[in-house]
Every structure is written in structure tokens, then in C-alpha cells.
Image (cartoon, rainbow, N blue to C red; front, side, top):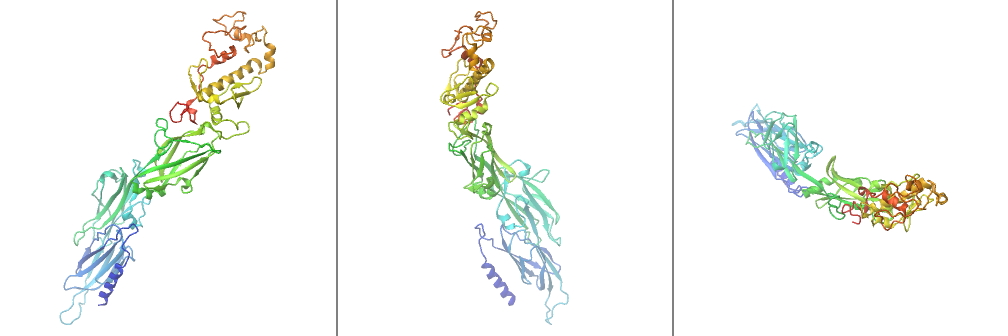
Length: 575
């Protein structure tokens, strides 16, 4: 009577326990099994637990006319899960496959038919509840957390790289009394979403292994396509009571993570806003700020929350510009948002070097694996003035500051550049003035690359004006007084016609006669009427300069102005 009352109270208590998991799913019902016992019986009775936690009711039913004199738990994996209700009944509460392992050992007696005294000998019986165990490795799951493992899929990246495969550990069945077989069978659904390798070859769902107790085998799971749930089931051999099998489950979520921003080819498919943006420009503020809102798509979308904590974005540095991740993205750590991963990063202050702009790479990584990477390009606001400055270049527009780093001016020592209202070299100084007209479009005398746009015009102008500087250095020591002293003279080192070119250079054979077939110019005419001379040429000195640099132009690959040759439409200076 007392035992029956205890059992009844236990059932009431169990019924009062929570019936919902942390994931909002109902707890599985109690799995009740009856095992007939008799003298010398050795039974292995599997409890096919469903996923998640479960309750097991093991009822011992002695063969008539036997009765159970005494029984108790001989062995179990967790002393807190299984407990004895009475000699005939055992309960496991909140257990998970494979925690159901237990061995119950007992003695039987047969009531006498007259004296009321029991038998002197008490034959024994043995009942084993075997277990099988299937676990992810530490990278993908925690073996100790069977509840989470049963219900929450481990994330495995869709990747052909062996290092990204999931590692699935299959353990030999546990049965300390060797009643159960050592064979186990592994199967899985969504077979087209994964491949399973045993280290040497691919295996198919339904594969049978023979693994001794205490041993294990590690399999590699390759994710082929995104899938929200691939369920792996490990089953033992049929028990010797009614043919049921011990089971364990794990789940995999096959995850693919792809960058949304940046995306595409910034050269052939430029995009400077919204999803897919692959061109980014510093703001016109001083200091300039470049803001990147990076985004990646997760498939299946419901995996985003699971993988976010292990996903990190990275971007290349932009010279000495100060990089800062948003407060909720420390170190580039992703935040999940409706099936996407997002971060924001800013760069403050334009870099000093033109080479710091241009092509960069953004990546999204899950742990050590780079899931996706895309190119993007970084630009400076062409017409603003927010570059790193000093007293000598504080007034320079950005295009002048950065483009000067792409062209090598002539003359030694190098000329000094200033920004002003018009372009030109000032003889007797090292100063060359550049102006706003050098950043737009221009057709150069004799130019074979006309029209010269943007950086082409700029580079031509720098070469042209620095050629004037070099000629003044070479011919007159860059001294106006020296030139004036030689102006009008007839000697080879003089300048008869005052065009700033020495006589020996114009009259190559020094015969005092203009031989237009061999002489550079008429040494007595400052503006020799040579064939096809453009009307804008004011003298031979200017013509000589232009003739030497017909093909001068800029390096489009180094134009990182917005607008510019690399921005949006390639080789279009004002886009």
C-alpha cells in the first residue's frame, strides 16, 4: 500500500513539472516499458527516447508465480536521473538520449502454497537499458549538453574545405554486461544537403558500424547546400524484449554566408549606395569620415541568430585613417537582423598617401573560416579641401594634393607647387602655380591624347610647367638676369631672338642660317612659322616644350577622386 501510494505521489509530482522547453516545444511524454523477468533472465530493453528531455518508466513484471523479493540500480550514467519507486518500478526524469543507461539487478522468490514461507533460494535477474551516443565535436557542439544537441542544430558551413566540415563522433553502445550488440546504424534525412565521410570514403545514410563499448569513430560531415535542419539518427540493434532500439540524435544546420555589401565588381559594375555598394567616399567634412555599413546574408535565414556570435567582419586599413567599429560591433563582431548579419565601421581623417585609396577587401568570417570576401574601392572627395595639410598646402584642393603624388615633375631641385588663379612657372624661382582649370578638360597643343580630362590635364600641366622650370635651370641657371644679359647676342650661348632658347639649340649646325630641314627653329625669329603650329603658341620656347610632351597624360589607375577616372564609369573624369 505504501509503495503504491509513493508511486502515485511521484506521478503527481512529475505531472506538475514544466511542460515546455526553453525553445517553446512541449516536453515529450513518458516512455513506459514493461519487462518480464524470471530466474536467470538477462534482458536488454531499449527506450527509444524522442528528441529533447524525456521521462522513462521501467516496470518489472515477474513471470507467474514469481515475485520480486528485492531489486536495485546496479549501474547508471547519472545517479540523479534514475531512481527507484519500488522493487517493481523505476523512473528516469528529465533525461536525454543517451543518458538513459541503467542496469537493474534483482532477486525473485516464489510464494509457498501451504506454509506461507518463501523459497530459500532467490534466483537473480538482470535488466539493462542500453544507450547509443552520437555527438558533435567541441567545435560544433558540447557533448555534455545533450538537451541542446537534440534540439538545436550545429552550424556547419557550406564549404568544400575539409577544415570546415563538421566532426560527428559515433560511440560504441554501452552495456556493461554485454547483453547488447556492438552494432550501430547511422542515418540522416536531407541526404542531398550533406555528404558524410569516414576518413577514407563517403558513406551513405543507413550505414552500419561495429564499435566496441568505450571506442568511438569520428565522421566528417560536409555541407553541400543551405538547409535549416539535417537530422542524424544513431540506432542500436533491436533489444531482446520487443525489438526496439536505443537511439540518439543530433542536428545540423547547413549554413551559407554571403556578403551583400560590398558586392559585385567595383570596376565593371560600380555601385555607390545601398545594398551591394562597392564604392565608398570620404565625406566633405574636416576631418573627412568614411562610413561603411557592411551586410551579409545568411541562408537559411533562421540560422543568423545562431551564427552571429561567431561571425566577424573585417576590412582593410586606409593608411593612417582612424578605424572604429560601432559600439555594438566590437572588433567587427556581427549583429543578426532578420536573416542578415550587419556591422558599421568608420574611418576618420583622410590618409596622407594617394596609394592608400583604391582597391580594398572586405571579409566575413565564421570562426577561422572566411565565408565570403569582396573587393571595394575607397575615394577622396575630389574638389574638397580636407586632406592632411601643412602651411604649404592648406589651400590645395584634394585633387592637387593627391594627384601630385602620381606624376614626377622635371627639374633638380624639385619645383615647389602653389595653388592660385592661373597656372604657370615663375622664372627665377622654384615655384609652379596650379589652378582649378588643371582639374577639368583641356586640349593640349600637339596632344595625341586630346582631350585631356581631369588627371590627364593635370599631369600634362605639371610636366609642361616643370619642363619650363628645367629649361630655365639648364639654359640660364634659372636666373632672369643671366638670360637678359644674353638676350640679343650672337654667340652660341646667347639668345638672339629673345625666345629663351640658346642660339646653339635653335641653329643646330651653327651656320647662322635657318635650315628648316635640320635646325630646330629660326634663331633670329622668336616665333618661327613651323608647319601646323597651333595659333595659341606664343613663341618657340613654348612650342619646343609642347613638342616634347605630345603624349603626356595621367595615370588613370591612380585617380581615386570622386568624381574621377576610377569612380563609377571607368576613364570618365567627371563621373
